[in-house]
Length: 509
Picture 1 (tube, rainbow, N blue to C red):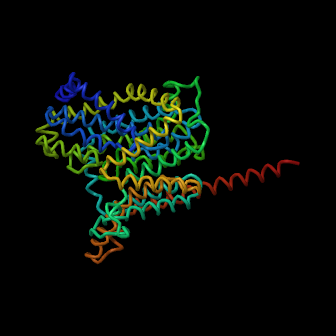
Picture 2 (picture 1 turned 180 degrees about the horizontal axis):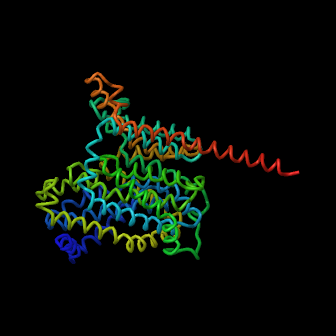
Picture 3 (picture 1 turned 180 degrees about the vertical axis):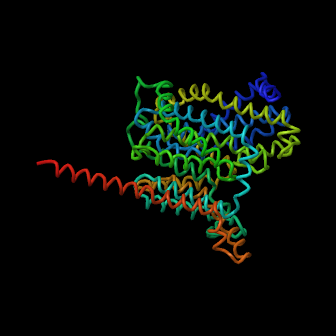
């Protein structure tokens, strides 16, 4: 009965209004390149200091939920992830929009986000103390191998050449080493430039590598940006529900992956969406359709990255270890309110904790009507705005969004430079996703490797440190599988086609 009363507290007019406002604001902010979920939550934290603790947490959680989902809009409609966790959404979302199914892709993203978010919140409610112990088993070495696993996934999923995917990931890793070292504080590859001293900012690189090439192509080509089909413009909810029902196992698997990955501090939605996309492609009968506009690809990535919202709160609330960057900001708000993480959140402060969980559940449910409504008008706006207005508007948002991250003109220059480099590389078959993921996962891999190496050298067992743990061996096995499985599958399909051709020739007179 107490849990029910806590849940009803989230339905008070004030909390309901804050959840509605938070979700809508988060969707709009997440859809704008450069304005990430972390920034949205951080900017609005001071606003919540005068609120009741449960109301403040509900609003922050709603903003976080909306922003993670909102990143799919720009990923689908302009091939620019609004948030890093939406990178994998571009793989199939933008090809769907190019062929005139952008409205369907937005609907699928909404349905998947709601499904994934609900799974994450359910895990937070029922499994928080149990699953949080998994995070304690991960040390520096495990995080190093986890980063390598993420790199092998994105490289293996690259369009066209797998070798070019690995080369792109390597280029991203090199970019991540510019500036001050993660461990030790050494200054590297700045060539005496003060501009490069702060390193390559991740969101700036993401905007440059994804958005600038799109703008250049928009200016260079006379065709419309997206295919316009008057008969198909709308929500297309029934069609979206049909795809979701056919991919129900894909949705459940992807949401579960997102929840588990979010429990590992620092992993975040980028790895979760990539792993879920890889598994969806691996389990599909027609894996070749992925990357060309397969609806199941959108369902997999969006279910996973929205499941990280609830999953990331598990280590945040139970252990005080933020699962994702926005969780770190919300944890700071918790501390300002005078609450300590740990068991007392579920005992002494149970009313606030469970009211917040219920509010997060409510915010996830509000994604459905708000997402469909805002998404419909977003799609109509993108396809009807003339290029002469669309290109300057997107360019202005990219510059402002990049500058706002660190109030640095240098970041804008780096963003523009990487954009031109990305456009040139794209013409030779190098996609931006491996580069961006190398930049994101590089610091995680470097920190884990250096700390693991120091631990191994101190104990006199470097090899055992890196290859002796069961978790490390499991992740290594998955990494090897992710690299060689596509090659083996392609070879098997080629051999099967050759055998069928031979059988057909023998059967013909």
